[in-house]
Length: 144
Ligand SMILES: [Mg+2]
Image (tube, rainbow, N blue to C red):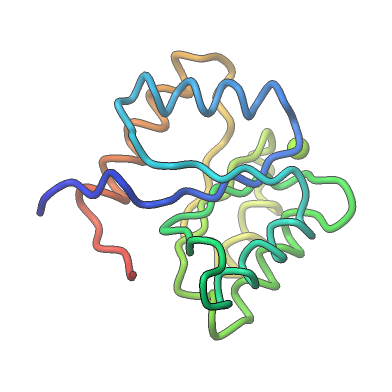
């Protein structure tokens, strides 16, 4: 498999600091993927709906989803994505500060494709994003 490095990642994250560290980690992990960032759940769902329009936004190859979001939270976003025929095939990786077993179980039950506890620092984020990149874009085959 050749590396797919131009596939869009949709980053759903309300913390500006976490957005910065995640994007920095993408860079340090050598990822060239374009990143679309939205800071709440409603905007994430709106973004996905715009992908269906001709000439609309680019469909993400992967969604990185923070669990704790203002308004429509990550669980609701996950439920909405995974109950929609048009969107459920998009891999969703949950990123959360919580590793509470109830959160983990609930997210997988709702259809999360993996669940990562947010690393504590930049080196941790770089490791996590490197692993994520290798798995989702180098090893796994994701749908177009
Ligand atoms: Mg948050």
